[in-house]
Image (cartoon, rainbow over all chains, first blue to last red; front, side):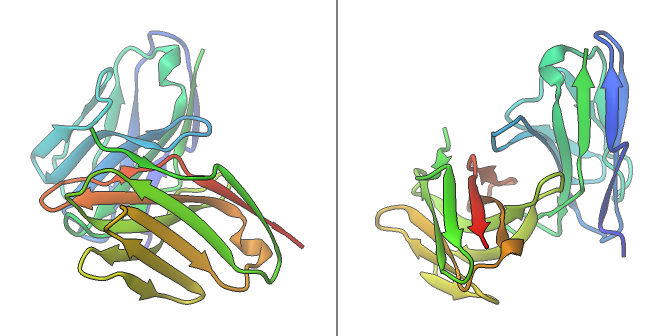
Length: 112
Length: 112
């Protein structure tokens, strides 16, 4: 049981490049989330999904897109990377609302 | 908007002492609260949760106290160990909400 798996662990992007952060979970959780964590700060919600085919914006969705074609996968897409997107990105899942999240180990992204 | 904050950004304790980490929240509709531990370079790890129909819940060496009157949450760690050194986040959600809101965190340092 791997839990929540994120890839890659580290990435450096140039301004304007695009990339997809991968997230997969093997716990059959309906709810999945993407958060970003800036240095010394808490977690800000980017997007979330309550089930396959359903996604919704969080607090800071600008510059990102998501899809949820399967229960297991919830990729996060950056289309035109900007320095403001330099952060650590965490994917999480939960069995339902108002239950504890299981987090992945994070992706550290630097945009230069 | 939601406001989940902590009274102290840093806390240092001697090994073996008890630790108390505090968290204030402003949303009176919040009814689910969680504490997470985040070690350096890792994703947040679930510690303990509590719902608003309770005012105390205990786990292994940890206790969460909820005071709904003053909108205050605390995490008590008994016999603090060096492995407890980490950043601790509180998070909250209200009934029907699809996601948690996280505070900015308190860094706990255990002095051997």
